[in-house]
Structure formats: C-alpha cells, structure tokens
Amino acid sequence: MASMFGGSGSVYRALHRALHRRLAPGVCVQGAARIQSVRAATNDSQPEEKYCLELVRSRDYDGFVSSLLLPEEARRSSLALRAFNVELAQVKDSVSQKTIGLMRMQFWKTAIEEIYRDDPPSQPVSAELWRAVRKHYLTKRWLLRIITEREKDLDDRAYRNLQELEAYSENTQSSLIYLLLECLGIKDVHADHAASHIGKAQGIVTCLRATPYHSSRRKVYLPMDICMLARSFSRNVPAAATRPSSNRGVGGLPAESAEGRF
Image (tube, rainbow, N blue to C red; front, side, top):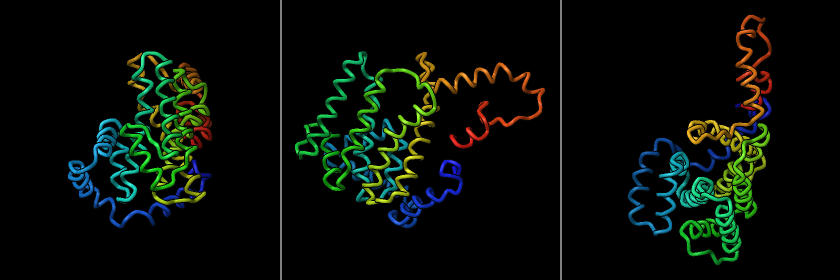
C-alpha cells in the first residue's frame, strides 16, 4: 500500500488521521450495536430512506456495512450516495440495448440538474440524494462525472490497458469517495489524494472479483495488455524456470510495475 502513495505512506496516514478525528472512539466495537439500531430505525424510516437502505444492503453489502461505521449525521447521506451508485452500476446489466441504457443515464443527468434546482424528480434515490446535497453541499461535478463514466462503459468493451481501468476507477470509485468525504466534512488535499489512489485500487479489485461472473457470460474486461502479458508469460514458464531469477513481479509484470500498481 505504501508504494501507491509514493513510498512513505504519508498521504494514507493523513487520510487516516482525518477520518479518525471524525469517527467516534471505539467505532468498530460499536459496529454491532449500530447494525441493530439501523434495523430498528428501518421500521420507522421514511419510504425513500428505507428504499435506499435496502437497495444498498442487497446490491452493495460492503458499502452498506462501511456506511454503518460512519457518524450518524453522515450515515443516511452515505447510503443515498451508494444507492445512486448502485442505480448507475446496474444499468449495464439490466438493459438489452445500449439505447435504453443511454436513456436511463440521461434520466440521471436530468435528475442531478433538477436536484440542484431544489426540484428533484419523484423517485426514492433522487429524493434522498437531494437531501444529502442540501445537507452537505455536495459537489455537483463528482455526481455528473460518475454518470458520464458509467455512460461510456455502456460500449461494453474491454480496457485496452491498465491506465484505462485506472481512469474508469478514478471517475467512478474515487468520485464516490470524494463525495463521502464531503459528507464527513473533510476538505483536505491530502485526503483527496489518498481517496484517488484508494478509488483506483478499489476499481481494480472490483474488476478482478467480477472476473468469474463475466467469464460465465463469455466476457472479459481485464486490461488487454495485462492479458497479453499473462498469456506470453504462461507460455514461457518452462523456459523461464530454467533461467536465473530475473526482475519479474506479479503475473509476469516487471517488479517495479507490479509493486507500483497493485
């Protein structure tokens, strides 16, 4: 992890300190109690809030659990943002034609504009997102950047190289983290820097985790340059095994590249 932040890990530590100041002491110990409190509150919550909570719990459980660790004043907004992300993420797999997907994305572009005019559409996620925007003064461009990048992803093509995957992750995952930091009231250039790297790492891990699912649908979204390297490396394993150890890293990548990227 330190290599991703220039070797010293100072940026990562800055984010950790910033979050630590915002999170209550013993937050992990209180996790179970918070889950119970959320379950109890679900029965009394408004329909829009309950919809977002259930959507995130069923489609993004990691995000749901991490939202429970946030302070109460940021928790509901976090769930709204993650529900918004889920709505966009599931468009690609839920439509049979790209045109329909583009129409869904246009709905969300229009919804964001209306949210910032204090006239949100009558839709649960939009209503909760409007509340979060009003409460935390969320930056509009991060929301629009997520939509734009998800819209480009409707082309359904593999990433040509690792840089393309990192750019996609920056525009989606990192943008979401920037918004979550705003919900926590954290405005710090070092925290944003760390969030950028964390978002890229999360995007890469998500791509790797989804490989079995994509393979079952006869699709490959792993960067093509990495796939070509792995294919070449696997063919040359018997020969390489007889040579003196060379400066190779994970999956046949040069050691400095593997260390810096992963």
